[in-house]
Length: 345
Length: 119
Image 1 (cartoon, rainbow over the protein chains, first blue to last red):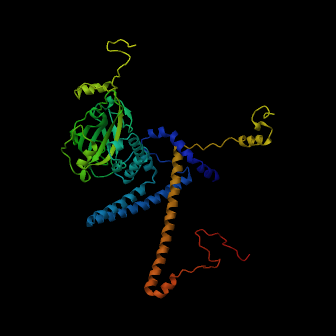
Image 2: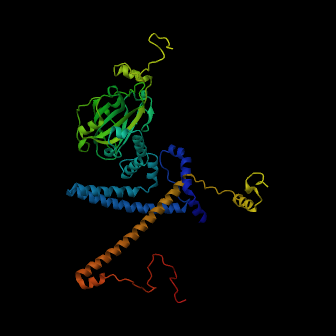
Image 3: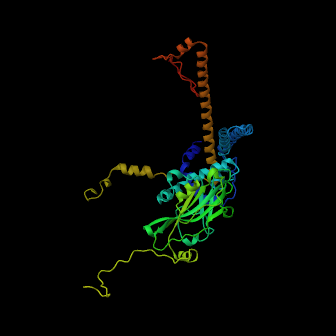
């Protein structure tokens, strides 16, 4: 008994060590395998306790579902129905969240979104670390005050994943080779609402040089409206949307500092039900004005950075039909050389 | 001797240092038990079940406490409806209330022998 207890006390640190050591083995497993019973008596008792708790909560969840159904049929007001729905959802989550299999699946990224517990765990996974990293990068590199008002954006509701040239999603703020973003980006918006809502996707270059005023300004690279996203439809289907501004790949000019390219997912008005079939968009617009003009709401945002390399020149020549610019310092006249080219004494 | 040579003073012959080293290093350091993946899973399940048990106990105690308080409140309301004079008397807060020692606060797990005050 004492050894068992003392073992338990020492296992806080061991838990994480064992997890790290067995991480690869676990990732290779495709489905959860329940540990054998009859080895640890405490484990067998634990299973019984968890099963009893689950049965109790499932009964409560069913009762809540019944009262929700009755309220919906009798035509109660929307507020009361929302309250009952939340109560049912919370009970449904609670009934399954203590299950080892569910937690294993969530840890390994297997979410069956038809069950409330997985919806809850998926959102929790997003809030735990990816959102923190995204917010840190957005604020650290000043994408948020420069592009949109951070007080209005708050923390984005949905997870926007940018993938390019067939690779997996990039980390927000990562510096990439511009050649990778030559083709249209693969955007994924992981939302946490069940209904399908229409969104507008905008890709903006925050650091386009503006020679006239010797500063930088925003330039729109891509605007697509009426893109449907839902909990089970996370990939952007560009064919289903209206392309208001065709995709132009990033073209950071030579001599300019690293450009930030932000991709923003904006929910269309009326909870994403209103369509935007045509809009007055140009490349030289400001996102704040665009959002205000069409009454959009920012739900997802991500960005990457890129600097000049040789592939950018081909973008200027082929797509923009202009000679590739090269920025640099104004040449300073050498005062020790006279007009005839000889050194002045 | 070492101190006079300009070295650290603790190299002098203090028997406590040797004793300390002996005590510290006479046994092998304790090894953390190495758990297999299955054992770790069992361990985490057990801790979760303990958490659920404690949650349920707390919930039961809270509900019982709330039930008793609600009963007390209902009694007061009934008294107020029945007889305002008695209700006011019941609401008087007495200072320096003294209770016999035997009327101790009931606990959920009392000792087998409460208090032998005769001895």
